[in-house]
Image 1 (cartoon, rainbow, N blue to C red):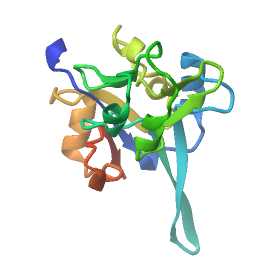
Image 2 (image 1 turned 30 degrees about the horizontal axis):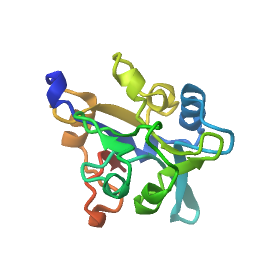
Image 3 (image 1 turned 30 degrees about the vertical axis):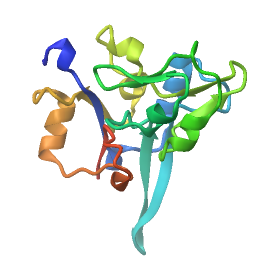
Amino acid sequence: MAPENTRRWGMAIETKRCIDCKACMVACEIENQVPLGKHRNWVGHVGPTGTFPTLGLRFEPGNCMHCENPPCLRVCPTGATYQREDGLVLIDYDKCIGCRYCMQACPYDARYFDETRGVVDKCTMCAHRLDVGQPPACVETCVGGARHYGDLNDPNSEVSKLLATNEHTVIYEEAGTEPKIFYIS
């Protein structure tokens, strides 16, 4: 494993393994006490695929892309949105004034406004779990085994091995955000 100060968290999602069970969404909501009707992650429907009579659906799980070049960070007037040394893009809720500029700047629509707390919220990749050596809740509960996480700087991590041996893409590459969520189809 790479030394702590050079770790770069990332995720690889094998879209063919996603069965749209939404266990990742439920696990996230419970783990992070997400308000009813709000979501830090999602499962989108992309498709249909194939031709008649062999048709199917493809699902695309998603969450905050924890961009290397996050536009949400640049527009935050209070510094509430910040990036840790390990690459995670997080929110300091004590500094968030709920202006929602970050929501407008995110090309992935990965943030929501929490009316109860008056702050913007999003996926943290379960930073509190990563910090104690546990996987993100969405990865741990993924029934189809579609979600994988790890240190992108460690060539022996599960995520690095998957990316090295499979073709992969990122969403909105043209936005220049350099997302750290990769899709293997």
